[in-house]
Image 1: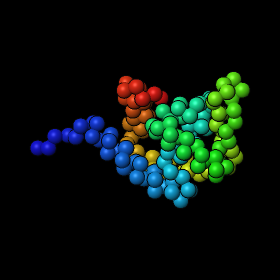
Image 2: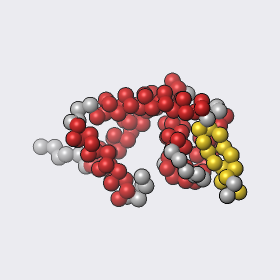
Image 3: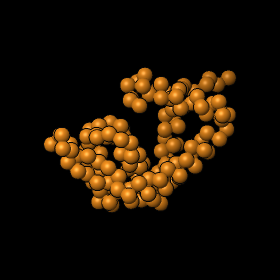
Length: 142
């Protein structure tokens, strides 16, 4: 009799297959998964440094700088100096960035519906908070 796979293995598999589906759905919109993640983070309020954005997106500060440069070049974000912190640039979505993010959100909603389709309503309500607890327990924020 085969043993159940470890939770860490299952979470890792989910991460990889989810990333594959995200990449496929975002590609027609001209975005990578880190770019979509960055736009999603920027949508939420608060001034963040490049390092803070990188931590939230789970990429290096150097990769975040490249990501922000690419989004800025496409006119999806605007970076302006923070009046209270000379070295921090505020990042905000442009109207084009907000519109593209909303389009991509619909594509991501479809992936989530497929992923959660076999779960009951109660399981769906519990899964998100349980996963957040796991992330926080390992110091991953949220």
